[in-house]
Structure formats: C-alpha cells, structure tokens
Amino acid sequence: MNVALSASVNDLITRVDDWVWGWVLIILILAAGVWLSLRAGLVQVFHLGKALKFMVQNEDGGQGEVSSFGALCTALSATIGTGNIVGVATAVCAGGPGALFWMLLAAFFGMATKYAEGLLAVKYRVEKPGGHFLGGPFYYIEKGMGPRWKWLAKLFALFGVLAGIGTITQINGITSAAETLLDANRQHVAFTLGGRSYSWAVVVTGLAVTLFAALVIIGGIRRIAGVSEVVVPFMAIFYVLFALLILLTHITQIPAALVLIVKSAFAPRAALGAAAGVTLKLAMQKGIGRGIFSNEAGLGSAPIAAAAAKTRDPVRQGLVTMTGTFIDTIVICTMTGLSIVLTGAYKVPGLEGVQVTAYAWRQGLPWNPAFSSLVLTLCLAFFAFTTILGWDYYAERCLEYLAGRHQWLVKVFRWVYIAAVLVGPYLTVSAVWNLADIFNGLMAFPNLVALLALSGVVARETRAFREKNRTIPMKNKN
Figure 1 (tube, one colour):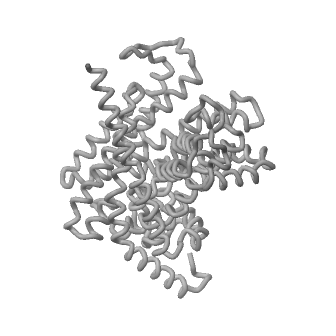
Figure 2: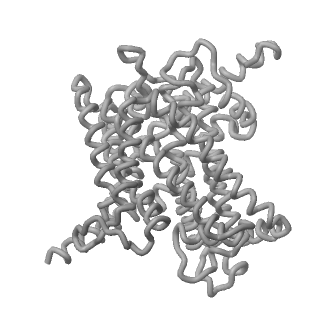
Figure 3: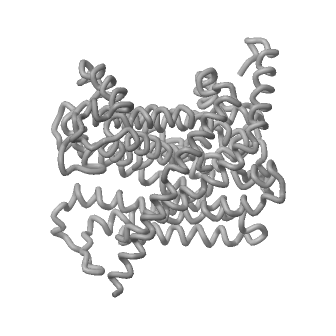
C-alpha cells in the first residue's frame, strides 16, 4: 500500500510539473519576451556590445554590495548548471536538432526579459541597515504595481524559498560523478540505506561539497559573489574551450549541421524522417522549454542578484543582467547542442541525459575518451556546485522579504540549507527534483504579471538612458 501510495504521489507531482512547464508558461514567457523587446527597442540587438562592455567595466560611485560583474556571476552561478549539459541533450534527443533553433529563438527574446528584470530590480530595490540592498520581483511588484499587490509579491517570494530548498539535490550530480570516476563498481561500500548501498566515494565527496558550500554560504552575498567571480568565468571558459575544440575538429560539417537544425525546426519529418517521431510541436516545446529552464529568463531569479549591484543606473544593470542569457544559452547551450548534432550523439539508441553529451565529447575530442569523460565530469561538478550557492542566495533573499522583522529566520534557514546539502546525496526520491521544478516554474507567473504591468516603466527608463547618452560627448561616455 505504501509503495502504491508513493507511486501515486510521484505520478501526481510529475503531472503537475508537466502542466506548470507546459504550453501555457512557455507561451507566456515567449510573448513577454517579444513584447519587452518591442518596448525596449530591441535592446538585445542594438545594445549588446555596450552590455558586454558594462559587464566587465565597474561603475564609479555606484551604490550596492557587490560589483555589477559580481552580481552577474552570482546570477550565472545559478543559471549555468547541469541544464546546459543535460537539459540541452534531453531537448535535442526528444525534439530533434530543430529544438536547438527554438532554444536560441527563446533566448533572443529572453535577453529583453532579463534586461527588464535587471532594470526593475535596481529601480525598486530597498537599502537595508548596514548598506545591505534587497530587491527583485517581490519589491518591483509591491513598489512598482502598488501595495495592494503585495500578496502577489509574497507569493513569488514563497515560491522562491521552496524552489531554493529543492535545488540542494544538485549535489546528487556531483557525488554520482565522483562515484563513477573513483568507484564505478561500488567495491568500497560505506553503508546501506533503504536497500541502496553508498560507497565511500559518495560519502567523502558529499562531506567535502557540504563543507565548501558552508564556508561560502555563511559569508553571505559578498562571499558568494567573490567565489562566483572566480569560479563562474573559469568553468564557463573551460567548458567553451573544449566544446569549441569539437567544433573546430568538425568544422567542415558545421554548414550541413546548421542546415539540418533549421530544416528540422520547421519540417522535422522531412529532415529526419517520419520514423524519428519528431513533430514541429515537439521540437518547439522541447527547445523553448529547455531554453527557458536553462537561462531562467522570466522566472524572476536573476533580478534578486542584480539588486545587490553597485550601480546608480537601472538601465546599465539591466544591460549587464541581459548578458547572462547571452552567455548561458546563446554561447554555452549552443556549443553543447552543436557538439551533439555534429557527432550524431542524439541518434545513438539507449543514451539519455548526460550520456548523450558524454558520447559527443568522447567521439568529438581528439584524445583518449576516458580523459574527455573526466573533463565533462569536472564541468558538471562545478556547474552543480555553483547552482547550490546561487539558489541559496535567492532563497535567503526571498525569505528575508517574507520574514520582515523576524530576520533570525534567515540565519536559521541558512543552516537548514547546509544540512539539506549534507543529506542531499542520499535523497533518491525523484519527486524532490520535480517539486523544485514546479516551484521554479510557479515563480514565473507573478513575475510575468509585473513585467507586463511595468513594461511602460522599462520603456521610459530605456528612452531616458538613450537620450542621456546622446547628449554626453563621446570622450566622456562610459
């Protein structure tokens, strides 16, 4: 009976997860991206170069807790995760190569969404005692839309806390990778729990990750940002260089791969054959859905980090925040997707998730396959670790908003989160992952309402920024 009940609960959670991340959310986020692109004058096209410059150029005299680059890296620590490796592979396998096209299209419009989120986060943020800044969807809902919408702000914050707790299961990816490398046959068992044995590789890795996570998390936003500023650029560049090597060694095949991606985006049956079972609807759903899940444009997470940036100009930080989607999806996810298409990994029977990307790296990189697997495993570990850090910060800030005068709850939550990371390797229930996905998706609904309601503010701030920059002599422009 207990087994049957557990199966029923898991089935219900899976159904809810599928509904939340279904066509309603996908269409809403995509439509919001299109609308904000128009209101902001295609900022992702005409100001991308300026955004990339602002990304590495700190603003003089700005108020905040961390640099704009530090805030961006904190946001990227949560978005650049296993979805860039596993999620892309899942999308291409289920939706065909055309899913990559739809993923990039969603990212293009998602850049405008991220721009609006970053702009509004800084405009409506609140300075707390001790030079501490708090902002994000909860404050631009409450202050931008008005106090009567505070219930919606609290709803977003509640979903943010719950999504953050579920993200600790990322440690499963790290410990599993360590076990595969060090003790694939589980010859050195530490203990057995619930009929499942756990090797010393899992136990020791879990303890080490928990210790490192605790040392960073206890330091708050400044330490998280400081670590992210080092780890995120390193891991992103490291991953891109290896993925780029696959593209260079298959450079003559890239034109044909691009043609296949475009053809299968609009006519998958003609490009892949009816036997592939891929439809236009499936290609769109998997591509757009996975793209949104990876870069989190519209979910409202990134603006929580953006609000801590040392800046005076909301538009400037909006531009910096926008580069997160560019780096996450248009650069990293594209690299992953192209390597999978070029090596034909998506067509290999029996492979799923990380196995698909691992096959692409083993086949695509010009050296020992074991070394290629080691490199990918290290990337996965770093991606998962930084996701743990980033989502702790998001959850803490959401709880800080909810707690009001009872700020001791934030400190208690911090230790509960660290304890949850410690037990994460031994949580084998898939429902935990699905619950995190559900709350992650639910964050989008209050955030999208605010983005659409405040799109006029975004348009006015953008126009004012352009006018100001037109009147400043070129030699004095930042």
